[in-house]
Amino acid sequence: MEAEALLKDKGLRATPHRVALLAALYASSRPVSAEEMHKKISGADLVTIYRNLQSLAAHGLAREVRFKDSTVRYEAAGLHHHHLVCTTCGIVDELPECDIHLLEKEVLKKSDTFASIDEHQLEFFGTCTVCAKR
Amino acid sequence: MEAEALLKDKGLRATPHRVALLAALYASSRPVSAEEMHKKISGADLVTIYRNLQSLAAHGLAREVRFKDSTVRYEAAGLHHHHLVCTTCGIVDELPECDIHLLEKEVLKKSDTFASIDEHQLEFFGTCTVCAKR
DNA sequence: CTTCCTGCAAAATGTTTGCATATCC
DNA sequence: GGATATGCAAACATTTTGCAGGAAG
Image (cartoon, rainbow over all chains, first blue to last red; front, side, top):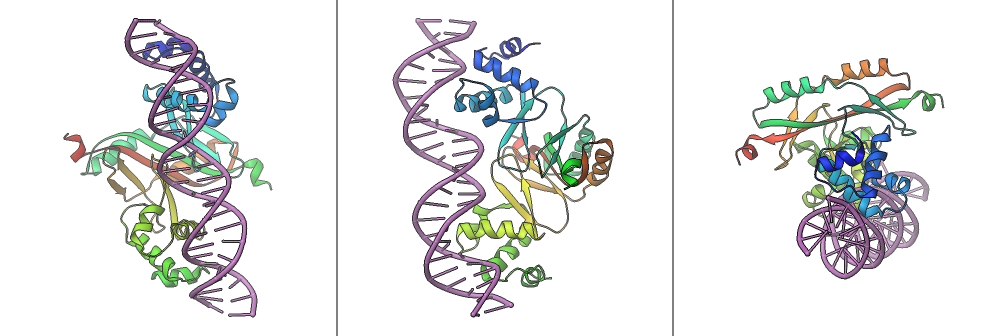
């Protein structure tokens, strides 16, 4: 499904900026920040980007990702997966699979304080081969 | 080992605020923010708390933890473990064990971009039994 | 007595809000 | 036409930096 249809399907208006944002998000291979999107999408105000990213996330079209810095990143809400981030240069690898849901069930079973687990956040940090050579 | 000895062992000065901070950190059952520590430790400037938390983390006495909000939290660097956070009331459960290191090795083996993985971040988000009843 | 730590003020960063105008359906 | 989205300015929250004075070893 293309961007415009995805938006309308969720009851969101398909404004040009929003369509561009969603398309850019789905085209990006790594999670992007509002600031990065602002540079990429000409004409859209940074505030609009913030609002739209939140809106996409709230409607299930994007997912929030947090690395070790203080900026919130978003990625297309297709497959659920995690990342491997180089703490030196910031390059990001995607991990294609996520076996954590199994662990999630175990964790919930052991806890008598929690009724449900809906989400998790898992990221790995290390050094890429390029940075390791220096 | 007590706070003062731990600090000196790392080559850090055992100033009263720092000793108090480290003691409070080790006494706390959940990750705390600079702001929370500031309220807890009377007389210390918030900036000093920020600097000391960073310093403790840099010397391996504390570890950074990030939940879903924008504040950085720290916890005592004893056992490595993860958390289960209620997205409604914020209550935190500790998961006693971490089996992710095994996964870490697998992940590294599959990646040809990365030379090493030194760290990971895993938190679960859900609803606690109290909040689930409402 | 030197190095490191602290407080204060001020800046920087990332994000949110209010409101009037413009746009989509 | 009515609800929703946008831009602009301004507020906000969290964290960082500079610098001069103070304390630890």
